[in-house]
Image (cartoon, rainbow, N blue to C red):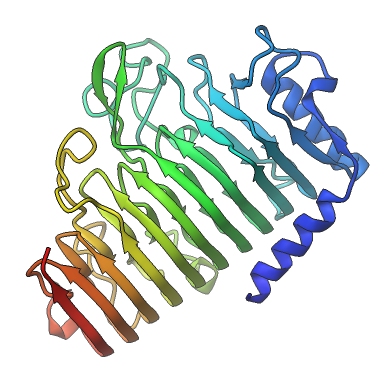
Length: 396
C-alpha cells in the first residue's frame, strides 16, 4: 500500500466513525435534500449517508433523482448505501462536483459505495458528448434545436467533476450510461480511485431507437493531476476506459504545475466497446507526463468482439501512448519514466506507441493474434531508452 492509498483509507475510516446525517431528514427535491445534508455535515463534522430508500421522494422508491448536481464540500464523506442515483430528464448538469471557495483548493472529499451502488445517466439526456460535439447530428440530446440552449456538449456532461481537490477518494460504485466522461479530474492530487465499475457502450436505446452518445470515457486525469492511485477498475466504456490527457489550450501551459505525474494504474480488467483504447496516455504543447506505473491491464473483450456492444470491433489498443493529432507529437523527453507490466490484449494493438517515449520499461505483454505486442507507429526517432522484455503473441 502506498502513502496516497493509506492516507485515503485512514481518512475514510475516520470519517465513517463520525455521526451521520441523511437527506431523509430534510424537505425539498431529492438533490436539494442531499445538498442540504452535505452542508450540515460539513459544518457539524458528520458524514452523509444516502440510504437505499428515498423516504421523502414522490414514490418512496430506491431511486434518488437529480435535477442538478450533488455539490461536494470539503471535509466531508458521502457514503452511498445500496442506492441508485439517477439524472432526471430535466437535468443538464454533472452528477457530482466539488464546491470551490474563492478559487482555492478543496480538501478531504470522500465518496464511497457500500453494497451495490449505481450512478446512472438520464433516460432522455438533454445533452451528451464533449464541447466539440453537436447535439442531434453527432451525439444525442433532447436540447437539440431548442432555442436558448447550447447546441454543443460541455463540462456539465461530465459525471463526477473534481477540480483542484486534494486528499480525496472515490470508491466502490458503478457509473452507467454516462453523458460524457464518467469521472473527470483537473488539477487534483493525493487521491485514490478504487473498485469502480463502468457500463457504457457509446449507444443507448431511447424510445426504441438506438442513439449515439459520444465521449463516454471512464476516468480522465487532466492537466496538473499527480500522486493518484487508480486501482481495481472493471467494466466497459464507449470511449477510453482510463485516459491521462495533458493538452493545454493556446498559451495556457503554466510549467511543471500542469504536468501529470506519479500516477499508479493497477488491476484493470475492462474493455472499450467503441473501438478506442482501454488506457491512453496523451500529452503535447509542453505538458509532460512522467513517473507513471501501469501494472496489470487485462482486456476483457470477447474473442469475437462483434454485435450490439461492439459496433467498432475490438479496441484500437489496450494501451496507447502519444498521438500525431491533438496538436502533434510531444517532444522527445516530455513523456518519460513510464513503467508498463502485465498487459494482456485482444485489441488490434496491445501497446501502441504513437508519439514519443523515453527512459521507460515495458514487460510481460501478451497479444492475442498476429500484431506485434509493442508497435512503434511514430517511428524509432521518437523512442529513446525504452527497454522491452517478455513480449509475445499467442493464437487468438
